[in-house]
Length: 436
Ligand SMILES: CC(=O)N[C@H]1[C@@H](OP(=O)(O)OP(=O)(O)OC[C@H]2O[C@@H](n3ccc(=O)[nH]c3=O)[C@H](O)[C@@H]2O)O[C@H](CO)[C@@H](O)[C@@H]1O
Ligand SMILES: C=C(OP(=O)(O)O)C(=O)O
Image (cartoon, rainbow, N blue to C red):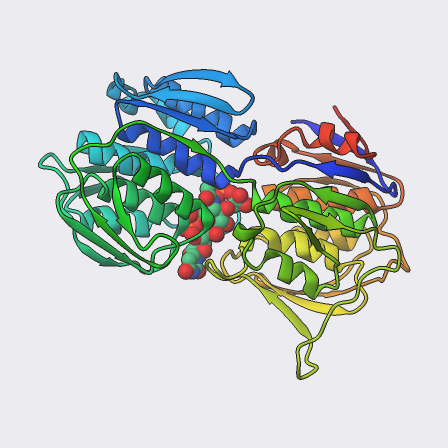
């Protein structure tokens, strides 16, 4: 397990180019299984989870060529489906959450799809019911081996389009069902579909491959099945969660940072929500400019004067993946805020580490934490900690960068899952961080 050593209290300054979006990349990479033709993808982030999925695709027989930084070609014309019954597949498939999305494309194209219980963040229960209920609606037979925690779906006679109202707007669930439905016979309607930019991008890519998906960007998708799909070229969006992480980092370290080419039109409520903590975010063309917050930042209140409350909701609501970052940034704000993580039940436990560092936080219950900001009157104290999940990990890193003294963060593989060469990029803008 790797460790970051961070000497806190230094201001950062400069430009940041965001990486390609992790959660989009995981969907897009699975979609290459839907065609035997070549698919070219640009802006693939060089991060642990994405590299693991590329490794899995390679073991499945996908021909993969790296063409340049972030650009690859994929050809799924001679797959080795026996790999799906191998021990290696059990290991590869359980290594990340995104692997679950190979099931839809395999089911659609080859009539069967398998997956061991996927990995990903340990942030509470992460059910897969939406995925499999969707496949069942399309006519697949489902089985689950409880002992081995191995899921399987089969549709030897092909899939048939259907109407489905999803129980919850699951992100990877919607992607999986869409990828199955594009090759099903007839029309599929998915209501209560997730509609994150990740999904919009996936649908855009599938349409460019010859799929017929309507309603992209909404929670009502209408899909007319086609017989087969062709190759395409696709570019992944900048990672909005990484962009939010840089905003938080800039504010908490009182640094002046420009985040380049962010695709403002795809950021949803992210800028608005950081502004609720009093953070100045300027739009300069397609860049985000964050001035040095030398006088700190003040939490706003609602129109009726009541205490600020920030919570997550399915898109276009505020993404749950940035709540841990907002929470850490709030520890130095002027004022108090209630952070309410509605989706995941174990994602706020990392606040213990922040409390150890001197932050004023009351963990009300597993979903809610009240943060009473220090207004920079008291600096956090450096400490040694371990990263429990990807977003808690980056939040602890932000805390360490603003703290007094030298901190150590263990288990940094959690951060490497989703942040491309974070130490190198931080060093380039003035951070004192080393990897051991
Ligand atoms: C690889 C990937 O893309 N991972 C993302 C994906 O995970 P993933 O697709 O696994 O997450 P889901 O959207 O399925 O659900 C996440 C959690 O939210 C709950 N839930 C979901 C929808 C809803 O309407 N109500 C509700 O309570 C679910 O019960 C579950 O506990 O979406 C999550 C929610 O944005 C993000 O945190 C993850 O980063
Ligand atoms: C929870 C996350 O990832 P995953 O779904 O891959 O665990 C995340 O990206 O914040």
